Length: 399
Image 1 (cartoon, one colour):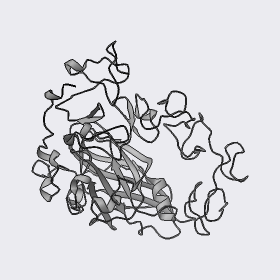
Image 2 (cartoon, helix red, strand yellow):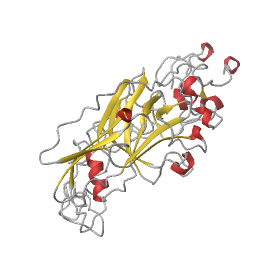
Image 3 (cartoon, rainbow, N blue to C red):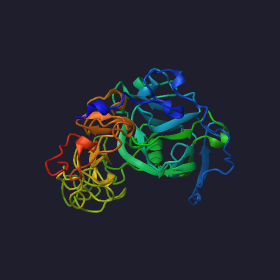
């Protein structure tokens, strides 16, 4: 296999020392982080909705805010008092978490707009960062094990609330109106939101321990009136009604989808192959890049509305159901294997730090800089390996 050519591990350098093997405070090196950005101009926000009152929830400005960095590499250390958080690998993957107290919004008011903003620090690489709803309680004193329950990031919902490109530096914002409505209305417990990205690049954000002009915030607007209504599957009661007016045993009933399920008066849902959005959800509950996925899985987006399961072939993130596309395969992004351990890997346990999974083993980038996907050219004798567990056939292609 040419193993004699392999180097012996991954070295963590500078900022990228976050998450290295020894889980101590010294893992996080702030010497290269620029604390002096001029952020006099805040995030760009939309015009307030008509007849709405708006407020900026931000530590030191108004309300209560929590934020922290979570990573296996942090060990038992809680990062809530640190002025920075991360997304991406270094080499262990990191997640940034935020929670905003919405008690500033009067009871019974209806939230009309909500925008989350965070300040990105010194990032040269472009990458998509996604926001998710956090499912369980945490605070700034919570460490990695407490946040995940010793699991692998099971504390957040796979559905994406919104995204932004973390390349460059400055304010990045996501519209989280629907989430804020459900937090305030009681359909969702308000445990805040989490930022994550594919385990390839690393990006850095200021937290509420940084200067006031750089702290994350939630801009929220509301008007007097009935609270937001619940969608199919949400909790409901007399104070939190369903949008269709029917509350079935404490839960808003699912859609009819052309007469299926739904109990006759539920909202209509979209079938496989049909267009979907927040107002027209898929009957399956999964809207894949604006189209309801239609069975088949394993095809890696082989037809209209289809998306592939973890391990199936892909060419873009939209080809994967709830995962990401890396090295031509749909991978799980909530767990990863440290590349410096040469651990066993597969699409459900991809390599951290963008390392490649070759012959079912994680290799650091300095050992194997790339690998060929299905149908690609390969030559193991000259260091051109096939990704994942694929073999190089006699024709010199991966299969």
